[in-house]
Length: 140
Length: 179
Image (cartoon, chains in turn yellow, blue):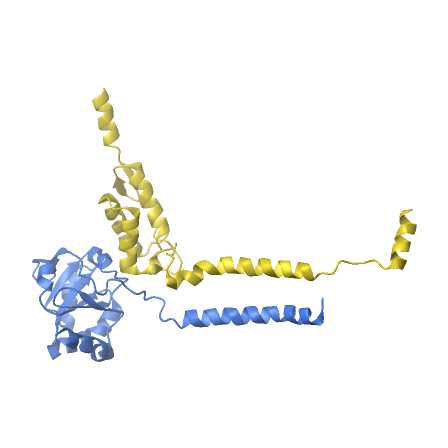
């Protein structure tokens, strides 16, 4: 009973994109990685969403690397070494991409500073004595 | 709002436009967007175990390493390769470097016919029918050309059709430093 259960568990085959995986974990990793990589020949499509022949080849390469037991990091390195940073939709933090990563935070900081500064500048409205008189009249 | 603040506010669109123009000007002048630098430069040729096109013999890195090679990715379906072919033939005739073809994702019959029609400048051709070697080399499409030194290290990569200028001004001087 236990043996047959074990055999059933071991022989689980998950199919994604026509590729067979021995575990759901690997199938999920494959699906996640092809979402993550950018098709090098396309303008703005990931490997998962492209029909370009090069995207098909790269999906097959991702499949092969997943099955060979490579980690996500190793697969990312493999792709980056061959197709450059262009292939990563999630760019690494390097001196070259520093501006890319820092600009949004910098913009928020500048905006906050501007808002605070303009708020300070705004003069509180002081009603004149005649106006105060009128208000008292109306509210009494 | 003081007049100074009003002027500053009115200048905002202009400043934003100038900033955007600046960023785009840099972006558009960075070079061709379809070419991305390969970090394979300075690294070994990937391992492969394939067959040759005309002789149908098995071929691996062993047959490539030993002398400087110009490895050209081509296919019979590739229009730009046709344009490049004469340059490759000239390079082969100069007899300064051995050329190896990588027949990329092609039908064997078409590829053989292509070589008979246009001439064969290659010492031998490696058949990469499904493009796996191409992926390992970081190839986008044909044609692409790699200069590999006698130790099998990739020294130069050219995307797109090779011109006589590329050969004379880039590859040849680089080749001279290898020998």
